[in-house]
Length: 314
Length: 314
Image 1 (cartoon, helix red, strand yellow):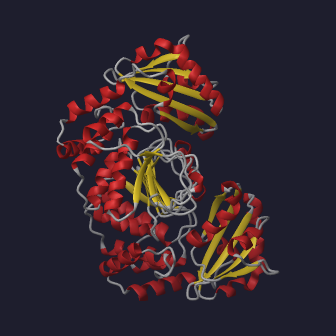
Image 2 (cartoon, rainbow over the protein chains, first blue to last red):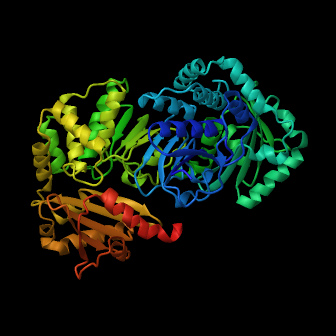
Image 3 (cartoon, chains in turn cyan, red):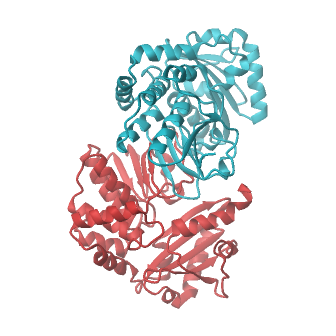
């Protein structure tokens, strides 16, 4: 077992997997005995990226072993999105691009969060700062992460730094940015064989908003409405999770990667917060279209959090 | 009023004041309309540094005005150490070297915490990253912050990065590092004219440890025992704060800058936690000598926090 483990969030996406892999390589290059890990299954989009560049997925881990010296979190900082026994291990570093919440350490650490579209963009910078050249396969992984998190550089979370990094990395990786990115997203957007359970768990994150517990699951697809063919099955899976985790709200977000709109389904006692946050009315099926909303982080979490905390800060 | 305000913690020390001043200059150089502020009086040590390099202290601020766009926190991240209305303002950046606790934002930000001895050390690095040369006076301020936080590079919080930065900055500032540092510390260690109220408030920080509220005040001096000439007056001031803030523990730490030991006074219902944390027995006057303890952050907060949270992580 390595002394330092590097991993991203539960329900791993392409940024989480690729950033863990690439940062482990960088740490090794700099003399740290580091190993990438994952906290859940590899999704189809990520698998496409791994296959394309001939890289194996990190090993799966349920808990951090006792003989591990320290861990590095990439692409997340909120403890409820991390490994279950995160409170028992020493966190030596965090590299992330999300809001900061529910994070605490006893000791100082290296904590680096930047308001860019993707953790991979920060890692690209860190290679330069340390004078380490990004290999062709690692450039491919970092590029995949950026194209995924930014939905082909179209998401409002995407900054000029991400765009510049993507072009740089595409050159090193030897792929056409647009063509490769679209093929990768399409591979991930194929939900035809996904069960209702898969749909609501494959990219789900839990958030503490004020006193409320909120889970938001997102699926990118070509035709969002198609996802709801069997809405009853999806609802039953969601209700199960609401009960198990005592959630106030479970928001399922089906995002059209070509239309850039989201078709959402809201369940739980706080579902009206979705209406307030986005100025929409949920229909009889508890669904609504959020026009132009593609980013969970920048467009959904921010606005929803306000509806749960606005009385506090007023 | 500037659009971006930069400030350190309440009960400002030399790192907090100097880092706010220097980072405001760097941000201006990089095109941001930034202004340094302070949340409390300038102590004697800091005033010595400001006078030596001919710099004016930042303006005092009780609350952040409504017309301010955003704020940057330096040298702290815990909200209870920050400005009272911190929940009402947008935090765009944090540059710090402390543990992370009780910090939360709705949106992603630039958050940079590194496990070095001083915020000024990170700012020295950031000048290089941005290709900005540190001016002579700013080098003097950054050097002062490092010599202060590291107690002349002797504190266990001091890293090789701090030592290297201090030597670099002393060259630019044109001062002898040891001579200047000792004179500055001595100026701050003169407590002869300080009232009991001054002693317990001039460098006080509040911490949430588990469910407990703990305040730790520190005074650096030549002869720690001398501070307690009128211990009754100090105790009365401390009890007042314990009542006002409903504290579980108030620890007053008198640190000898030459001896590198601390003579502490503990009051509050949780005072026995100090005995457990440092394996000492408080005498009849509620005092104990902590041998070799000079760093609140690395030697006191860490150990005390464990005694308040150990049942939780077990």
